[in-house]
Image (tube, rainbow, N blue to C red):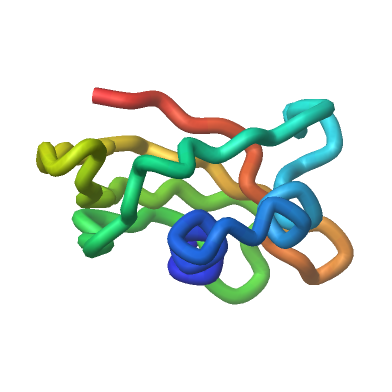
Length: 93
């Protein structure tokens, strides 16, 4: 989760696509150049421990866009395949 947030913050779309599950990965990924990510809060986590294949992370990602602050609040689902955690999908609150 933290590495994907960092990839959003620095605009690394290649990393975001590589860590996105192939079943839900978008064909193209365009980031908002005016959106500046400023802080990540992990609010809760379930699963995602040794010998599990699924996990959920609730987070709040803070940003500014055109000088206005905002927050993306999401519950993200991750799956582990071949020892690698992949973002599957998320629901925003």
